[in-house]
Length: 336
Image (cartoon, rainbow, N blue to C red):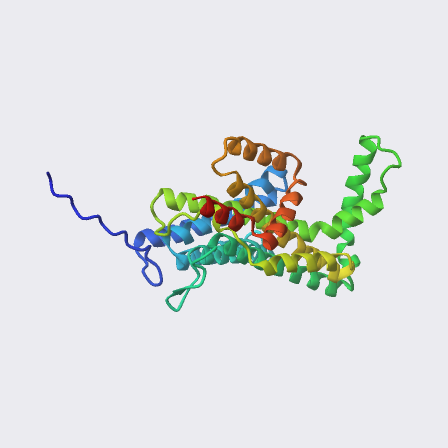
């Protein structure tokens, strides 16, 4: 028999000071790509906004494939380019809503190494989402607070948005012939009050999808040395997240600035819990005959109507209390 050659050990991705020519080009390319994708939003069309959802992807690809330091370099390049054009404010928005959350998620997904120890060796997917969500929620909340203080109140800060929303809703009611069933003034006030929280939740959703996509690309190219996590099993948020979500939801009913900030955290934490709820469904349906069909229907319904995601937030909160997946594993162990 021919002698088998020893398996080659896969070396870790170079980082922290190792700047080869290919890595330098990757950092520069990631920065230009990130700036170009985000700058498309200046067109103001729906297609441009959807395309801008891919803005975190170049940074995440570089960070997961070449190292966090190279991802940070890409983020700095993109922020600098966008600060030159279209404007410095645009660069700041990119930095706090795209670059920082993406780097936080990549850092945690890579194990959150600190002084030679991995702080996120368990449940890394959940911690990565929580890290990105925390940065996004904090950034949006600070922006809302600054706008309210500078304008003399939250209502004054949101007045320009409410005027535009009122016109759009009034036109919609008129064209749909809804008559007196809805009050454009009340609807526009509600929509504008929820706008910062909705922006935060959609931004977090963008980071989650791009993190998943960048991870798949890094895995396919064999650039990542970390094994692909079992997301259905490992996406477990700390139980305190469910408690914070309930507290933030209660604060949201206070209205004014505290209510707006409470709603921001309620929606971001609610989305993270909804992802946990989806992970629970994946785990419980694993190995069943109808699992694939059921999950396909679930994602189609969520994609078409959006609001059913709230049901999975409820499942996520319940899982924080009852640990459905642990109970299933314990039952399987007893049967085995």
